[in-house]
Length: 209
Image 1: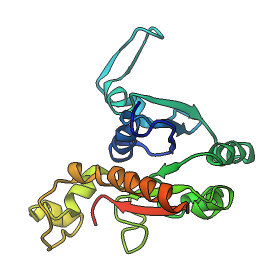
Image 2: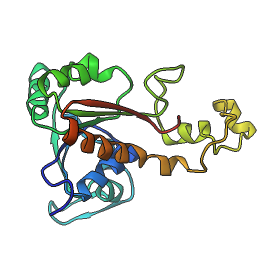
Image 3: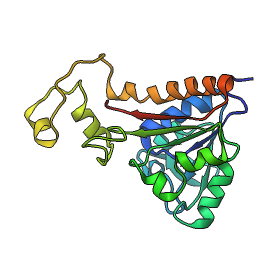
Image 4: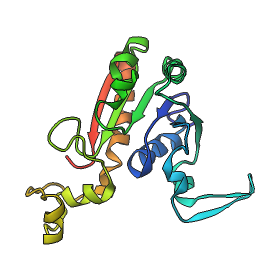
């Protein structure tokens, strides 16, 4: 038996930060369900290098496989009423909803924290973004290169300053790649709090500040 056996996680994140965090939960026994769009799905599926997938006689991304072991996937169109209904049904007995959309997207789709809390008072909701849910960079796409440029570890070289001004602050010497694990630890803490107090929580995590 693993520590998170019986824990249901709906994972709407994409690429490294979110997928690594939900991978930690899956490796601890959580039932992680990736909720992907109905087009090509998570675009990490098409990230090179590609390797042979003998199960379907095709190729698959090694990157995607490394970050999504122990998870299941389904495609849901959250922009359609039927898709929203499916997602809300899944969320009724979920323990965690984990997303990495730009701030406000989940609310506009009708599946944000406010809507989920109404149907599941014990939900733990984690919103992961590059620059937080407010402030001047909240709408900036959280690509790892831009996160690195704005991180405290950036050297402040001329090339960096021409793209984004670097923070002139000093924090713990943890790389942007290392900080992506923090939302995973945050979720574990909230899950423990839920078991004791029984109320919902929302965690807003950013990979820079």
